[in-house]
Image (cartoon, rainbow, N blue to C red; front, side, top):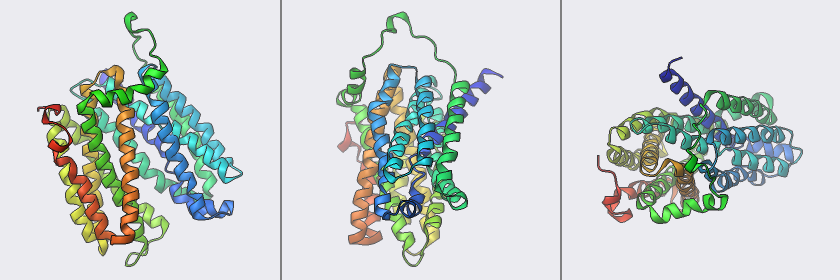
Length: 398
C-alpha cells in the first residue's frame, strides 16, 4: 500500500474509533423508559445513567486527556478503548441501576479516547492538511453521537436494552484492535525531550494555557457559545416534537436526530478552507449560518419541514465552527501541548452545552418555542462581535 493510502486508512480508522468510543455516552438516552421499567424506578431516576456518562466524560477530559502530552497517544487511546469494553459488559450484566450508572461513568471516562485521537490527528497532520484531517475525525465523532441513539433504540426494541451494551463491548474491543494495528507507531522523541512531563504539570497545563494564550481563550469562548446554541435547540426540540401538532413518540424523536448527519459532510469543506488560510472566513460564515438557522427553526413550531431544514443548517454551522476552531488552536500552539489544548477547548465546549440545555429547558416552560429560538440566535450570533471577545490581533490573517 502507498504512503498516501496508508495515511488515508489510518485517518479512516481514527474517525471510526472516535465515533465508537464516544457513542457509549449516548446509548442510554433512548433507553430511559426501558431502564425505568427494568429496575422498577421512575424515568427521572433512570436519567441518572445519562448524567453518569457526562460526568465520566468530564472526568476523562480533565484527568486523562492531558496525559497525551506526556505519553504515546496511540497507546493511551488503545488502553481507554480496552477499558471501555469490560465497562460495557458490566453495563449489560448490571443487576441494579447504580451498577449500570457506575459502568456508564467508566464508559464516559473511556470515551475520551476520542479526544486523545483528535489531538493525535492534529499533531500528525501537516500544516497544509490539518483542517481536513481534524474535520474527518470530528465527522466520525459526530456520526457516532448521532447513530448511537438510533442504533440503541432499534437494537433495544429488537433484543432488549442489555443487548445494546453487549454489542458495544464487542465493538469496543474490536476498535481497540483496529487502533493498535492501523495507526502508525510514533517516532521516538529526541534525547533532549525524553524526560517525562510530571502528571501534576499536565493537569495544570490547560488552565495555564488559557491564562497566557488569548487566541485559545477566544476559540474556547466561541466553542462555548456555539455548542450552547446547538444544545438549546436539541434540548427543547424533544418537548416540541412530543407535543401537538407533532405528537411524536421516543423512537420518532430519536430518528429526527439523523438530520444532524448533514454536519458530518460539511466538516471536510470547512477544513479545506482553513488549510488554504481562510479560517476566519470559515468561522464567521459558519457562525452566521448558525444564527440564521434559528429564523428557520422558529417557523418549525408547526412545520416539520422547516424544523428539519433549520436543524440541518444549525448542524452545518456548528461543524464548520468546530473545525475552524480546532484547526486554529492546533496550528498556533506546539504539538507537545495538543492534548492539554484539547482538554481546555473541549471542557469549555461541553460547559457551553450544559449551559445551553439548562437555559433552554427553563425558557421553554416560560416563553415557549419562540423564546428558545431567540435564545439560540443570541448565543449563536454573539461570536460575530469579535472585538468584545478578544482583540483582532489574536486572530489569524488569511
